Image (cartoon, rainbow, N blue to C red; front, top):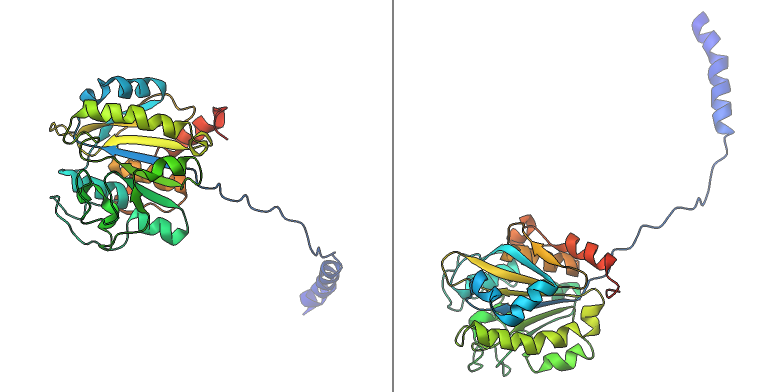
Length: 287
């Protein structure tokens, strides 16, 4: 009891001192840094060309010298369709053919629409119907029509691209040439000439100059080794990208640029987002 009586005055003094401490109201706090806005992304997918053959084409070789090329980039599967699905959903869905399959409405286009992010798929030969448009259009090269088995209004004719580059460019522009210009039926030299006419329009656009990036790749090698080229055309990015990459890496990078979560196996894939950000920070062109 004597110990308690000795402790009581000290405890009372401590409580009184604590009660007299000033209390801060309305203390200023720093606001969190807002997330960076999405950047414009352009994707061109060509057909059935191995890495070495693609890099022997004059215009493609020039792009590789002027910008960046991934030297260890691989297809996911074959034939065409599972690669297009991998690029747009992070999965092949177990598909090993080019037939039509109705898949859950969980692809990249569905994700962007839900997030309010603008996108269009420019399809050469498209006449308004994803399933009956005539040659040179091919539904197997239009992955967006498989998710939900619908034909989104975001799928438009290739002829709309020039107008949109000069006005209201969507944040994602997915560009699919027809069966001749993509090299499938008419060879890689034809695809090279088509690129020489199309890429200058993209890189002269405001959307590309202000932090945009253009990816050019091939669905599959057609040569058995699975190695295809990925050209990364972006202000300030130069040289060879030697790390292992594949179509899931492309989806990972596109998702990171557009600030949406990665889908499927893209979650574990290597992204080029940090390289693009570093290049943009050093480039006077990017703004």
